[in-house]
Image 1 (cartoon, rainbow, N blue to C red):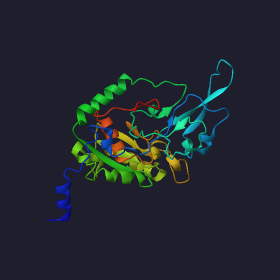
Image 2: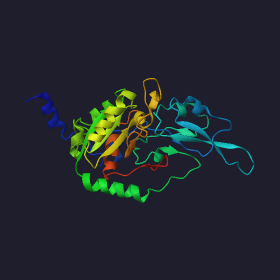
Image 3: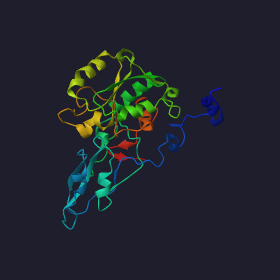
Length: 279
């Protein structure tokens, strides 16, 4: 008998229970996630985090003056641009930006990735709810994915590959990858969407049968990430094709990918609303 067989028999089941049960089963306990804006206002005249951010995910927002007429400002954060490098946390003198363990931040709208201290999260409209219910009815128990690398550094691809290992075991959830867009329900896009990849990506999307859905995985696919608008980099999917699920990160971990896929299927809940995490 092979050694790996003996090892398996001795250890028993290797697959995580995630997404069922405690979130610690996702294998991400103690792993640093996205930064959080923890205060409404910042220290006077401070914009150190804005200057330190390599992807322009942060911007200074002027707030209404207080009763003492002292000018105030806060920080807006776009998770669709954030690569979780933690530079903003390191340079923030007042603790307005702090590290967190939040990582399962897939959303159904681009607006839900954007935190603004002056804005409240918008409620999910009826159209979005109807779309979610339609997807859930059709694909609750099975989903086939066509992945397209549209100019990635291969960080996202490494995380996708990990979905197939014994710990995450994506197939147990009825989710599979396919080589042909004609057999796919979901187009999963990684990378900045460089100019040479725009036509092949759109061709893959057009070849998919209806109904079909799109997921933008990682900061690059959402906004262009580190390489946005460069001589060889794109700015993400933008208006090229419609997007149904956005998954921020650089790169999102396997458990976050699973959460976003199950979010599409109506089998998990969205944790980020208007840039505010409920976790």
